Length: 168
Image 1 (cartoon, rainbow, N blue to C red):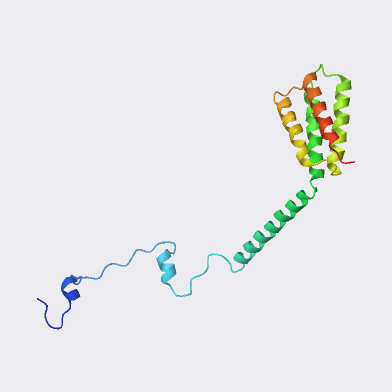
Image 2: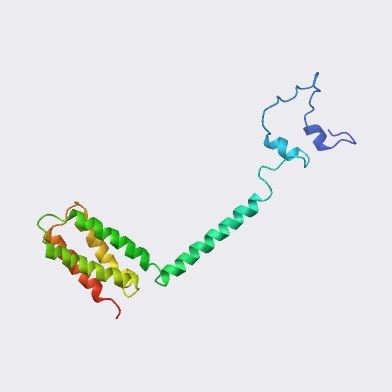
């Protein structure tokens, strides 16, 4: 039965007995706990200097602008010099791994076709997407680190195909 002035909650809420002695203070730790940080007044020192969020945000924006600028440059054909450098390196590596039975005339023909192709790439007369079959052939031919006369002929044929696509 409920007494007149009491509510249902009063009857259902358990009463805690008072502690005979106060609880000991929490042990001191050498760092600031999150609860201490959030419950403290505004005297807490920030973790980073005030300029850091602005500096990082600005750096992120600059990086994004540079990435977009590089993408625009690449889409307009500005990557010709980079591809020329790459093919120059490939040509040097290929010359090192020609087998002894590759004739000097085959080597000279390879170098001439490669020179023509590199010039076309550098001057943006050859589209970059036309180079994919050639790159695949170079990778397949040079996997064993030997380029035979038959493989040299295959590369020369691929180079001629690429050079035929050059804009005049």
